Image 1 (cartoon, rainbow, N blue to C red):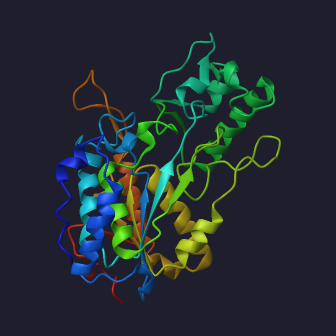
Image 2 (tube, rainbow, N blue to C red):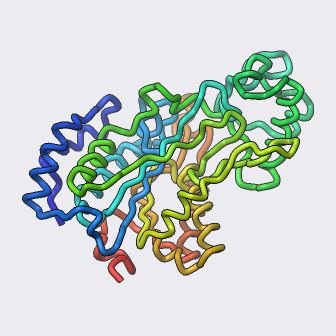
Image 3 (tube, one colour):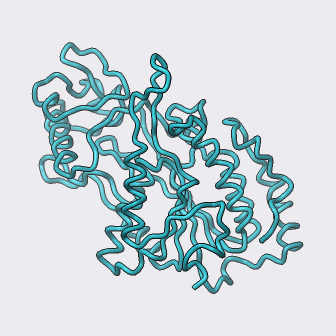
Length: 349
C-alpha cells in the first residue's frame, strides 16, 4: 500500500477555497507512479470502481449553503479527509473514480424561491410542503417562475406541483422539503471539495484512469437525489418529465467491486444506493455482495437550530442508519476506511 503522497495537507480538507494545481499534480503523480511501480488501471484484472456522491463544496464545508455537518457538526469535514486518504492509500486497488455532481438552477421545485404562500409572500427554506397545503392554496408556485420552470402556463404548473406532491406521497420515500439554494451551476459551491478533486486527479494521472463525472439534478420540476433516477418521471398529463440513467447502472453493475461514499448518507447517497439495490434485485440479488458502502466516509443531514443549542430544525441521522442496516441485510458490505481493503469481507475473493 503506497504511503500518502507528500503533497497532501489534511488542513486543506477543511478549506472551502482550496484549489489544487493540476499541472503540478500531473508532475508529482508521474514520479510517484514510477517510484511505486503503479500499473495503468486498464491492466487491472479485477476492476474496483469508487463512486463518490456529491462531494461538492456546498455540502462539504460550513461556508457552503447546505453543509452536511451531521450531529457532530464536523461530519463532511472529517469525511473529506478520510475519502482523500482512502484514495491515496489505495491507488493501486482503485481502478476508476466517478464523482456525481448535484447541479441546480435558480428556480427548482425543492427551492424556497419557487413557492409563495396564499398572500404571495415567498416561503422560507427548511420546511416541508404537504399535498393538503397545495390543494388548499396555502402554498402555490410563484407565478414569476412559470417560464423558468418550463411550464406552458400557471394553471398547468399548479396542477403539476399538486401531482408531484401526490406522487411523492404515494412513493413513501420523501415529503417535499424546501432547501436553501445550493450547488448552483456556475457558483463556487458546485465544485468538488478541493482535496477530493486533488485526490481524484492524482489517481487519474498515476493510474491513467478516466475518472469522469455524472451530472444530475437540473430538471426544474423534480428532485433528483439519486444519480440514477429523478424522484418523479411523468407530468400530470402523462408526458415524460425526466428519465432514469439506466446506462450508468448497467455500466456499474459490470464492475467487479463498487465502493460508495459521499454526501449525504440520509439523502443522495441513500437514494442512489436504493436505486442501485432495486436494479440488483431485478438483475441478480447476489450482485449486492459486490457493493461496499463506506459508512465513515459519509454523513447525514442534521440542520442545527441556532436558537436552541443541541436541537435541530431537521435531523435525518436515523434515516441514514436505518438505510445502512437495510443494505447489510440485502448482502451489501458496510465497511470503514479504518479497515484495510484487504480485510474487507470478500473484497479479494
